Image 1 (tube, one colour):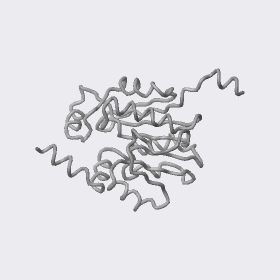
Image 2 (cartoon, helix red, strand yellow):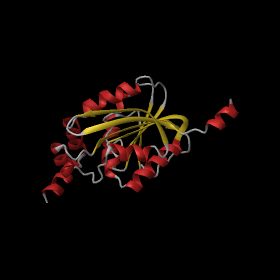
Image 3 (cartoon, helix red, strand yellow):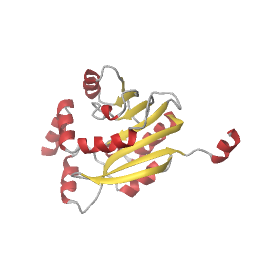
Image 4 (cartoon, helix red, strand yellow):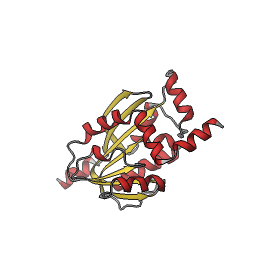
Amino acid sequence: MLGRVIKRIASHPWIYDQIQLCAGARSTYKRLSSQVAAFNSVIVLDLGGGTGLYRHAWPSSCVYMCLDIDKQKIERFLKKNRDCIALVADATSIPLQDKSIDVIVCIAVSHHLTDAAFAQLIRESERVLKTTGTFIYIDAVWVPDRRLSKLLWKYDRGSYPRTKEQIYSLISQQYRIVHGERYTIFHEYILCRGIKKVDVTTNAEQG
């Protein structure tokens, strides 16, 4: 009962933002900023971007698109970012053309998805990402011996926490991981950056 009440309250967009900030979003923001500082004038798609907490981690020259299934969060996003693009849609069925996006970022989304849905999100991201594009992933991981983390997972709306190995295995089905790092706030987190698995033979022929 208590868990359901907490989850209902936490779903409110403003409260959601405050919870994310208290849970360490500023630290994640800094980590993301260090990864994207070099991206200029690119099209960025934030999958499950919610209210756009990480929008300003990206250079102002970027075209920023926020996709989320929650209409209330998208409405709050647009109030804060009138110069950006918003999509009310499911990240497992992205309403964009193939190879149309330069960078895709996915933050704190996968623990809300089943393995099948997460794998579908990865496939969809690969479909809409340009051949030379970049995929950036950040989320908390399941570490059984972290007591505080286990308690937080109990009240999190996400039902599918995974280990680092499980996450890497799913992402590696579509991407070659070129950077990975771990950090700790209340949970343990991973940040990884992947690129598309391009056929080396095809590239050689084109060259």
